Length: 96
Image 1: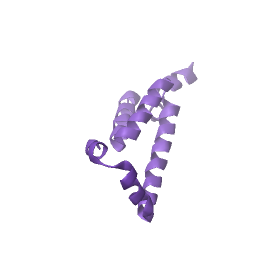
Image 2: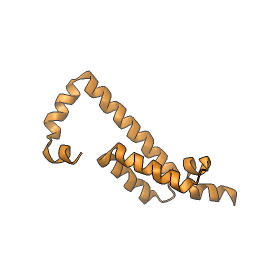
Image 3: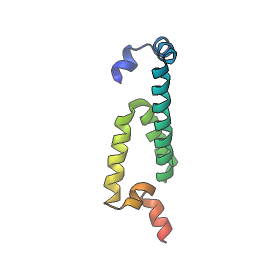
Image 4: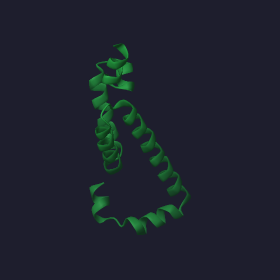
């Protein structure tokens, strides 16, 4: 990613990518996944600033950031599926 950001030419290469059906499909797939994953982060995070930072990290680092977020969520959940899905603070708020 660092190589692509530092040596790539987004406008020129982006035009070539958008000219190809598989390029359009791949971009649509990637951005749909980023949107859905960002929505889950927004749902899960109590602090919206944290959700925005994670979303920006997704845009820059792609699936590396999503993998890190999932690992963090798994660690916070301590084996509880509802905490993994909804976040620790939302579960605490529902119980009180």
